[in-house]
Image (cartoon, rainbow, N blue to C red; front, top):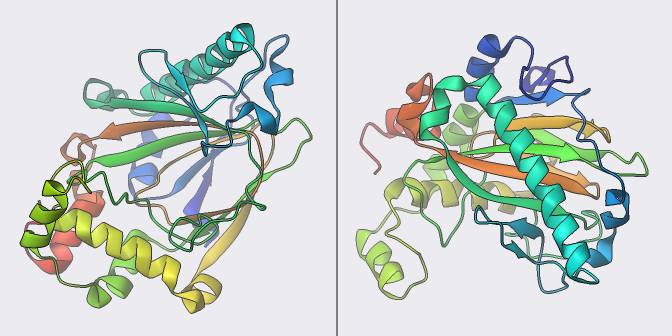
Length: 290
């Protein structure tokens, strides 16, 4: 299972080592781990690493593409401005890393908000569906994406040196073979009703339905959580890691103070579109899913 995590040397955000060779690993659902790729804090930014800087009404602090910040409980306008500047600087470096890894992606990438996650994972109380301490692949009930990829860059900022502890599970192909046969059938009328009721922001495709079934099936199977193939990986403070979170099975067990950048990519813009979850599921079922 250790082959699910690929260690990459170097500390240059814009010029990752062996970049060309890493794209097939990334598109195979593996986690690229950069142990020396640190996000450096500027003077005064260490004071922003505290739990109460997040609004209790929000799970994370996010910075939109237009520069608007949400979810913060900063003490004053100056502190909020410094918080936004820190998150924005991480966004620039995370995007430079992806551009260096996969320059062919750049014209097709769609930027999502950047998040700062200051809360302790281990003490968070959530429902089983929302509990990211259970192995899962990312899928979102209200946001159908019709196969669009979810590419994420993470950095552990923990000032006390505490790791961000993940479990990384088996390949997406193995997950699909295990859980697709258990999935409830897709019903187009239900998808239309969900859109009409504004439960979903757009029409849920059969692909989106299946991804939710995988997400919930994995999280709801406690035997699978305990006994499926997996490896525990403590990402140290000062390290960075990258994965397609809709493909890499993962669970977040512990840690505090992390930056995260999400980028979206249509599967046909991948170097190998046939490696995408959409293509894998369509091959398994023998039909189009979007």
